Length: 520
Ligand code: KIV
Ligand code: ZN
Image 1 (cartoon, rainbow, N blue to C red):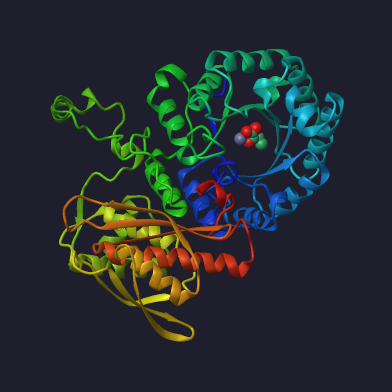
Image 2 (spheres, protein in one colour):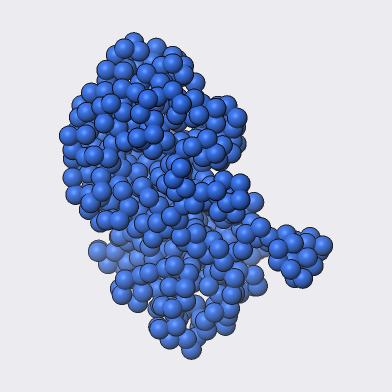
């Protein structure tokens, strides 16, 4: 049997559709480029019928990303398939991904269709998609709670209609590893043309079993895994790409399979997603969490110093984790800077490189030792840069025990320079109030997080804020050795993104995201 497991990344579709993770078309493209550098086999770029913005984003990714297969999702009806085909027109390697629910509860209560109608819709949609491309995937939504007889019937029909990949989703994260493996084996045994298609799995993490279920399915013959960066996705998320890839690689002795993934790009990809969405992974997250390679206990530290293999089953460099802390200083030139970035899988165009280099030089003036983590924080900000209608010219803060915290902020916009002073509960509050007055945006600060990028009192402080105006939410981020400067700039970044969303009059795209209420 083929020993290649294809990695189908659905960060831009199943991941992006969950509250808080919405991305602008530009951000989707940036991430798609990184996914291609990571060498995923398939990028599911979106669900074109869901909004004109999503259709456009899929089209842009299809036009720009040429090596990976680009998939667009469609329900099993003519309009959805038409939208997917339209979005995928420019793709070098398009895939239409057709799905329909097959469990009794979904068919009866959600679709209100009989099983015969569901089979007919699946067949028609696969045939329609096949007129456009030879690469058609069919998914039976809620397969793990569907009757096996019915799955055999509908998959058989889908294969005869031309589906080349058959996906068996555990949509609600309900299955268990032995049960799921048995289902895959049964389907492969009972469907006559089973060996003509690629068997795929798509697991949600409601019981924390998404990765384990996917691995069990691989042992049972699945050769495509659908997953997301950092495990983002509906509810508890999807199976985490980095965990699956590293588990298959580290335990090749057990699974005997390989993937095409360049694992040294895993950390960077995880960071990029975090930078775009403003949502960090938990420190103890497997593979890419901050503590995944940290050894705190003395006995562990001793072991690792003597021989890393005592407590490390993977090496940090295998996932591209920066290990050489001090890399550059204020005398470092552009060439060394570019090289340091490339060593960490970052490729910026000339203009972006020039801007990031200028920020690095300014940082090196303030901070003697600039670590690669510092530089990557600046890169993260560069790649998610959005139009800045208001720019910070100056700010001043006074705070202490004797008087209320006060801030004065000067912003530059098309209409010139304006200055406002405000007081607040604290210096950050005072800065935000002044920015609200200057921009005319009545935003509410919902989340404020600060992280020291490296150790030491001169560490770069990375501030991430989440702001809300009405139903629109935006994430802003900025790093500086001065945490008040980082705060006001991060807040202003979020406000500028809110303004972009407001201008476009869109409720779920741009820098803001759908499902704002979920963060309330
Ligand atoms: O979870 C699910 O069933 C899905 C399908 C559309 C594949 O996301
Ligand atoms: Zn899903």
